[in-house]
Length: 317
Ligand SMILES: NC(=O)c1ccc[n+]([C@@H]2O[C@H](COP(=O)([O-])OP(=O)(O)OC[C@H]3O[C@@H](n4cnc5c(N)ncnc54)[C@H](OP(=O)(O)O)[C@@H]3O)[C@@H](O)[C@H]2O)c1
Image 1: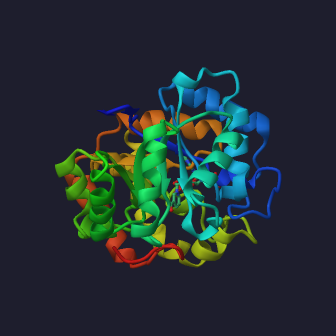
Image 2: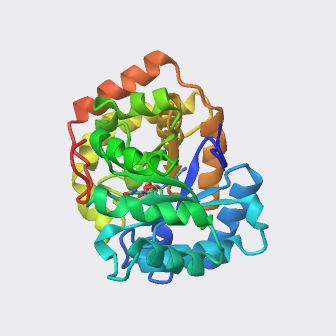
Image 3: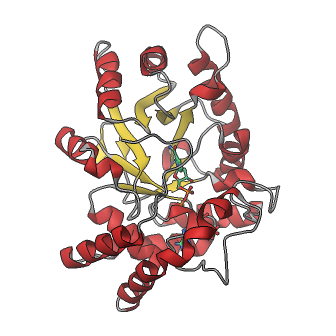
């Protein structure tokens, strides 16, 4: 699917966890990531057609962007696309804090433009959205997307950009089997009707929906994701077991079933890949077609689990 200048692969790659690298065990994810390991992730992804990389200035306070640029070293800029974010909560007090944050991201990313620049959340849509217009005009950003916005906030951002001849070109919200607020609020339908790609984040619920974590093998102790998810792992068991069973009949895993579910719903999952084999999983997920009955069954099991995985930074859609 191509939307203006953006080529949207079946899945985008998320690099929030990459902000943990170098600080093994004490970051948000508690992941142990090495430069050489991430380079392998990049090589495998790039050669498999997964060339859209999502980051944010706040991921590891710049470290994710820096590490991503290192891992992409040697690739021509036309071979990959970068998506990163302006986060209102860390805005400075210059004339255009959006431009300032973008310039810092560009320096870390080693590039002079971003393919898709996001307003990370709707802290003050009317205040921040107009500041994107000069950046679109100068070509420093090619497209604007909004993240964690509800329908009303999307419409407001769209109206502001529309006055200058631009529009909201993409939406990025939390969307997983366990968290379907954007669907219930009509945001998926809105995106479909307007030809705007919907990027779903945390499709794997930071590892909790992969089936590989359990009370006996919990998420890394001391990490923020462990604090959120370890307590609910027992309630996810029936769902992840069924995902594993569905996967086994097709030579795939529970994580790949979760990813295939997000694709089947017409969204573009942003998967937080941390290991080369996760990219192999994406290749299988891209080819995995779930039957309508399987989608419905998984959603019922997810509802039965009755867990609320809304992020601390999110508001109801
Ligand atoms: N706009 C926003 O507010 C917002 C918020 C959250 C996320 N995001 C974006 O969405 C991306 C994805 O979210 P996320 O990284 O938080 O979580 P996620 O994609 O739900 O889960 C990522 C975790 O799942 C595991 N994993 C990934 N692929 C796997 C596979 N094929 N098989 C088994 N396990 C696999 C990895 O855990 P291990 O390392 O333990 O193996 C990884 O750290 C982020 O990186 C970020 O780019 C945006």
